[in-house]
Length: 177
Image (tube, rainbow, N blue to C red; front, top):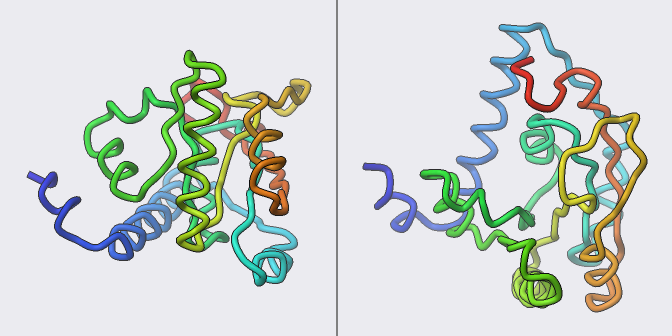
């Protein structure tokens, strides 16, 4: 039933739906489990993006990491694993937003596809949000970036802005809360 709306409404409207979803999600987390979120140094993001789109390299420790960027980033394309495309509505929503689906089994072909889609998004003045480790890791795990982030940095010739999170301390992988 929601399927036609994903294709009828303009991308800007769908982006606002994403922001609304994030706000409702955090409100529910605050009310139900008492989770409080603190952001630090956000004033730098607007300054760093004033000259055009950038690559945001964000740690990925929990499901919360997919919600939080909506609070401090504007106009961004998300790099996500291809498997998420098959989740009803979520996949179509991200397809419509021109998110970048990566088939990690395809190696260099996946990286080339990611680069093409990133260039396309950046030409539309949209920054790229990537989780460079390629999967969720816990705060105590060593950082092990996949080659995609280095390839994007080298080929797109734009700044990479790291985003550090500690959400894994509060919402661990494969747990409800």
